[in-house]
Length: 237
Image (cartoon, rainbow, N blue to C red; front, side):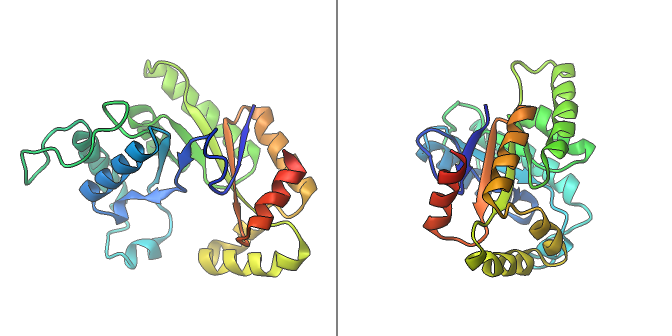
């Protein structure tokens, strides 16, 4: 059964997860320390969402390379895991982060569609997250990730998340569209096109992800207001 969360609500019964974070636009040791701190504060419920990134401007404005981001991500993942295990990192012989609650790593979910994404899920992750798109898109990735997970001999099963935006009510639709199209630039029309815009759409989206075995669907408010979360809960919970 899919667990539904509106933005960051209902934290007593679900985990805490970031949206997809572009790890290669951040300094790896600092990221490791920040993530391990959140892991400690949440009692191990925090899941770090990581993606390589597909927008070159995200890297330009942060002064980091775009075309070598995959290689840098793999190097960063190796470094943060060394830090979480308490191993020395370049520049010091002392641990640089709190130890994760599970003793070895902060749980990570990876997003994206490429073969390296699946490899990273199997090597470092606890599961996969769909950063937008219909249930059918997640279903295809679930098959690929699960097959690679089994082939690698990983115990248990990977977890699967899906993310989507929603707006309920004509009175805030214009604000929601402006928020998304301004933030996503060239991708804005596509993101807005996939946004949940009605109670019927919300119910259909939840049922679709539940039917394929998604573990958790996280719906983000496109027009931030407590009333939006309350309305969503009234319609689909």
